[in-house]
Length: 325
Ligand code: TYM
Image (cartoon, protein in one colour):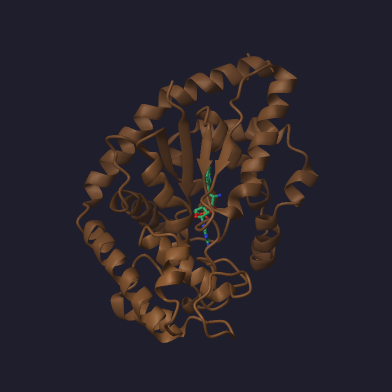
């Protein structure tokens, strides 16, 4: 039987190159080998303050981004999390086997509870349980994500094992999937922190919707290291990050980029990198703008319809195992 992958992105903030290189690019490559399910996780997005009209728009936008990036709805299933109520139903049951210290340890919770101190809600705390439900509901084998989500995939593994031990074998134990160069794309203004959609400065990230002028400006302003050479090394984290972006978009190895710029300066490297990004995003944006919202809605509906029987069957099994009549 073909193995299954599942992944998702929140419809909040702006999607950036980190999301693309850490997640979506790998999905596109994996969809030929695996039965693939890609979700727009709208229920996760409401754990932080949000505007309903924006959420509606962003949900469609994220689905369009999947399609423009090359996720093929003929091969992969694309859907919206809230269209399948079994996600929240399973999350409730998993809540009851999750230990509070396991959630307290989550780095994303610690970061977000600082950022949204006025809005510290139980949903934000329980967030990893809903993510575990997303993954476990479909007997997922592989979860392609960026490094920041590894801790959450680990919780999903823990809960699957705990449920299986307590109630009998029910869930597949999922494995994370990351690509080394893309799993942690760092901020352009601060290579010590990951590129983030909630960053306070727009010079932190390249949004997938940025114009060529903006991209050139942002790359020009990207911080560099104190050295002068284009070297792929942990001692030069800023250049290492830029080389990673270059290599992934150019389908090259970091070493090839290092060799090509061996005798060249930062200015030339940055100028070329900006053009690589501009070319990639021009093509991406053309495809994005060509996708009709109605077509997206229909793909999302079909996706949910296809998955519903799987979700219902798994929930029946879970309820029976737990003793719900
Ligand atoms: P989210 O929406 O924050 O991010 C979506 C994906 O982008 C990756 N990512 C990055 N990768 C590399 N470098 C970066 N700077 C960077 N920033 C973000 C994330 O690792 C992620 O893969 N909880 C998830 C969404 C989710 C999910 C799931 C994922 C909900 N249910 C089930 C997989 C399976 C999240 O908030 O991702």
